[in-house]
Length: 458
Image (tube, rainbow, N blue to C red):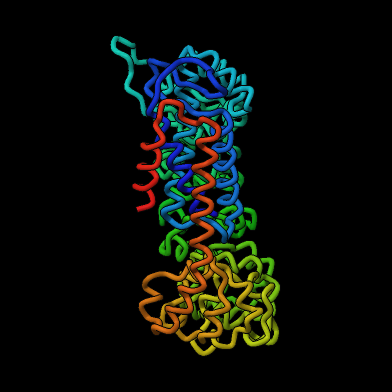
């Protein structure tokens, strides 16, 4: 279903620039004639795209394992960005009909309309009309950010810098929750925070301010991470829920945590500590993780199962603890619910252990986990185990993993994946049919749409 969604959304977004006009006609929103974005799009599809963008971001915030592939992430992130730009461009034109429709669809707050219509937002990808005077960067207020956080995700570095100190300080906790901020925005926000809080260094900041920075902490340097007051559980929690740390940063956080807690190993760590540490757990070495109490791991499986950031040697150590008699028990006794909870830890199983998974247990194996399993381990699965794969599981096996399998295993795998391909074709056909039925793009010929779809499919 996700792949069908990609095709439908991508086609919609690619066609935003095709037609021109300045009216609401046939239930379509028709772009301003002189707008840098000339397009025709149905109100229904625009609302649908916005809802899908919202759901996509919600999954990211919840760190769901059922996220999309890297390519799908890129497409949807770009899609969300273009929707933001679409709204912002039309707010800065005189297209009153379009704006009223956007408000009616609840895609933009009416107060935001009034605030932005008097300003030129420089972050929009536009070609300014000739002789138009360049205005100063738009100055965001906290009330605007709270009412329209999606728009703030397109704020430029100049706009961030232009925020008043009072408005920025008031809004730090809200900005810190915007998980979709890009790295250059986070850098600009950290620089603004230092200025607004009158702190030259991160480690001079009060703990509450560090907590409130939220995702902006991803711009901390290694030096910053090495002096953080990680004795504060609230700060550890706020850093542990972030999933974009690299291995070097995670190692710095783990080292700092052990230092402030005066720990020589992790033998005294509780399940509450494990949950609090979150992704920081992947900063400890495999040997350090091996000192964790198995019983505490058994109480934390639902949380550590989300840790895609851990390397295979770390996952192997964690799954060894998880399959201890004091935790989930031996691999051969695991049920689907346990496999689902353990999530990415299953990628740490050995070739011998993976053969012990029952058919029932395999039902709980998330399709997002399979690509993480080392190819030399996955190939140890029996033919019957592979035959028990669902179509989603079968299609998630990578080409590299397939290359390590026997011809017989590949045949079984291909047989299981066939159902998924047929379902995808059905979804794509439905999406194309729906788009035609609503008269989405009135100035595009059916032949051009088909040609565009063929290019995307290739």
